Image (cartoon, rainbow, N blue to C red):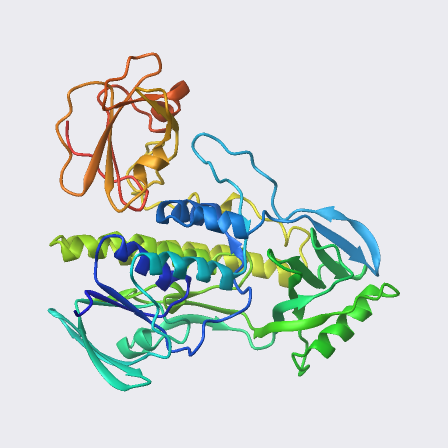
Length: 477
């Protein structure tokens, strides 16, 4: 059977989209030109909003089990201890935000968890399968795949390029990838062992004269490796020996032996944004659409959000509601431009040696991403993230709004007992009553009034929550 959607690229963005489509029973294929699944920590920071997406997709427990909270960092100047710090302050969960802090897990492990979830839905990544070329028109896409068995022609309704910064899909569409690449700055990133260091902490080594120009080692969950980041000046070769020499210059008499370099890459500031995210039935997500510096931990997370935004809209289009696809590019490209600005500003602080270069705040957690009309003056409006809140059913069992949202459906929240009509196709309706009000069999009680408060609701308010957890426009009463 021909797929309704073909995804080129099996990184976090492509896998997220494939899961979201597969759980909607959309026939999907996901291919990747690599012969083996990639290793290495790469994007190891998972932002709070991405944790909410993973909750909905059914992988949050596995991610929490495999990963770890952000570590405190121990600083050393000229080889001597210089205190501890955190990149971001630990925030207590609230009724509206159950996962307010980031989480750390190597990208290879995150991808493995996503692949396992996808396999449970009956779809597997096809390795060693390259998208060679494609043709597209108003009726569909014809793709040519190169496999170990030769060329395969695939007819599909939609094609999604999740194939990275050098995207074949984007290049074939002739979409400009505007931005800059600074060849004068090189960083060596990778995974390494440093068994003399306490693996419960991150470590920063620098000199007192230049405290922000150093080497960082962040512990990777599930083993003894650290992810390191180190300047790579001039024509220095990216080797274990060159990294050891640089660390030795910073640690003085404190000898720290580095071993087992399992993955490494040379990174240059490459900050780019595609001029278009869609051409007809072909879409771009993730690094194919935007490339971020690693500062702020935004790249992988933004790609996952691209996929989460697009999945339900492709599902709706295949059910006949094609106009929703017109919202993908304006919603996500505006977000990408803003997030790139944050990442670029943080990179500038790091290069300049600013004292707050390593500090992270609410602007990087992606919980504030919104698609609202900027002219809308309301505190909460269509396009905003839908908050969580604790509820209980008539039997007294605890329920969260996020429990109601979980799944491929939209959710209609009806506040107050008012004999609401049934919801439309693809939407589940729930009635929420105030604390102390006896709940009927199909009603939920707002524990301590958090749901009413979060949504500025009164009895009679109706709130539509989109399948991706953002507020839609509720039907008229």
